[in-house]
Each structure stands twice: as structure tokens, then as C-alpha cells.
Image 1 (cartoon, rainbow, N blue to C red):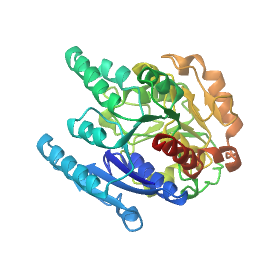
Image 2: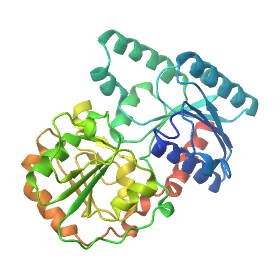
Image 3: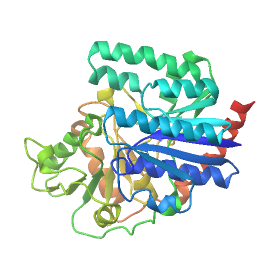
Length: 356
């Protein structure tokens, strides 16, 4: 079985996503899938170099303009056609005529990672959004099946009457060492992300810091320029950090903070990679959404309601959770189902279903 994985992502700016793709490739190979990745990117850097030494990955770079992007995508598609795979697997980002033509000739599977209709309805002008809906239909009708990372997303795909595999984001657990629990005087909480995403809810972390003035907070990936009104003195904003750099902060972290404002884009369910990294490193987390891999109450996840005032109205629960988990770490056996190798076999079974 030959599977071509084509994605248009950053290999630096979206390092977590790129890492997930490369780990998927390794996991597919372990379970007998002959897979190659074709990454169209505007980034230049070292994120992919480690993987390029051992994996069949082709990086096609563009100059971050529309003309250059389409030229690079065309090269990727020509290369895929020459390889002649049984399945073309694509991490969906938006409609593209070139991809439509590719899916006319090959069995296509789309991986859907977000509720793009809800997200674009809020961020796009109305006319542009309506055009997106129509073009989205054109693309989705051409593929043979979908991989949806949440049950919520899968329900929106049922109208296309095609096979759907619900498979939350996985993580290569072996790559993440369980960090020793810190033993310091006051609690430290950390968030890991990038600015520009309202659903992260970092403004709620600032409100939490204003309430718990004797706790320390780290909002990694953000700088003071991202907060026009400033932040309390117990909030650190170190900006973008490499993994080696932010691990020093996670070493001192009692409890991590995940996505807190998914309601702002009309979503209830998610499976963020950062939450999986927290747990793989043994750090319990506070979230405000339904996690696909944890449908039931879980001791090491404090799940707040997915609403605007959830942080302020659940201060007591947050205090209790943090005090309960200080000096403790999550047991790895409780998160083994997050491993990408575990999920790869499910994907292979789905591929075989599509081939039939």
C-alpha cells in the first residue's frame, strides 16, 4: 500500500504540526504502509532536518507569495503523480484547483483538523466566506473519505455520505521524557502557544494571574507587545522559544494550561497537540473543552466549562486542582492511548477500507 501525504504547512512556524506529520510517517512505516510526505512550505530552517535523514520526506519551498506557492504545489503534485500512490492523504487547509484535479485521478483522504466553517464565518467577510463554502463542497465531493480529529467535526462531514474515521491527534510519547515534579514554595503554571489565536484564551490566563497573585504564570510564545493593557508582575512573557528553551520552564511547572476559549470559534471539542505534550511530560493540565481522547472525567485534567467566564466562576476548583497536583506527575500508563503508533494501525485499517 503506497500513501502520499501532501501538506501545506510551516516547518518552523507550525513546528508541532510538522512534527506530527513526520511522526505519522514513521508510525505508518512501522505498521507496513509505504508512505512518503510532500511538504509545501514557506519556511526555511532546521525543524525538518532531523527527520529528513531517516524518512522519505520531500520539502518544496516557496517565497511566501501566491505565484510561488502555486508553482511549488504544482511541483509537489507532479512528483506525487510520478510516484503513483494508491492513496493521497492531505491535511486540509483550503480549496485548491490543483488538489481537485489530483483527487479526480487518485483515491483522496482529507484530514480535517478544525471546524473551518465556524472559524472562517467569524474571520472572513461574508462574500469570501460564501465562496469558501462552495469551493469546499467541490473539494470534499472529490475525495473518498475523511479523517476527523474530533467527533464534533465528523458530524459535519456526514452529509457527504463517505467513510469517516474519527482519530484524535496523537503524539510520539517516547520522544517526551516525564519531567520530575518541581518542589518549590509557590505554584507555577505554564501555557505553550503562538499569538493571534483568540481561542487560546490567554486573556483568561491574565485574569487568573490577577486572582492568584502569589502564583507564577508563564505564557510561552507571547511577548509584552501581544498585551496592549499589560500583564501582572507574576506573568512571564518569554516570547518564542525552542523546545530546549521552553523545557527549562516546563521543568518548573506544576500545572499546564490548555485551550480556554474554543467557544469563540463555535467549537466544543478538540485534541490539541500541546495538551498531549503536557501529559506526555507528566504535567497535569487545565482545559476548557471536551477532549476526544478523554470523553470521561480524568483526574489529571481539570475540564472547565467552555464559556467566557469559566475561569472566574471556577476559581475554587482551579485552586483545589493545583494544590492537589503540586509535586505530582501523570502516570504514563494512563495516557498510552495517545501514542501515535497506537493510532497508526487504526489509520491503516481505514486506508484498507478506502482501497476496497
